Image (cartoon, rainbow, N blue to C red):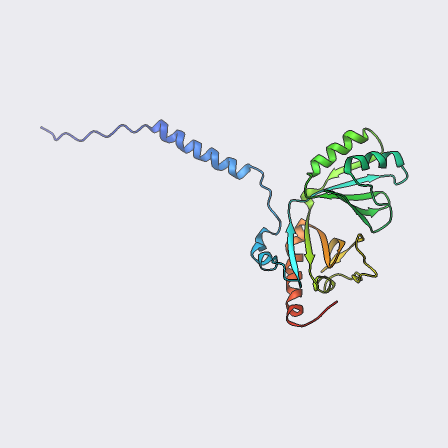
Length: 230
């Protein structure tokens, strides 16, 4: 009599296939789900080293700031009043200045153009509220959050580090608190806002953010070793 071969255990192939399909769908969902990540995530360890307040130079990334570009005639007082009721602040009309509210900053970019920045409200929220309050009219509001990021420099040596790559006169007499300017930083376009007491908020394109920060940190090295002041 031929030897009896042991019977193979019945493997529920359908359950294995179902499990694999579930794992695959979870992986695909993780791959395709939108993820908000700072453009400075790749140099987070370097920013952490310079993120501790020391009175001399501190760098702080602000990846969750929302940005909108708002355009309207500076002479339309009624529209400006309705916009101010939504934003909680008036749009600055004096060149190269910004107005600061509880949770929104309005930055002058041109006679009929402003950048709205908020770390509390999302750009979509600002855009929706403005459109609802203003209704149809001659204005434009666009969410540009995906194109920009914000970084704050502070400390006694912050203006000296910034001056290594920025041609602006950063002295208090020429660039006082509440003033802003569009310039270049190591040849990258940047918006600089003076917060006073050695605090500068930089708004840069996401694609330039890591490059700009690496250049700033490199510029700080010789300044850190020498007793230099702006």
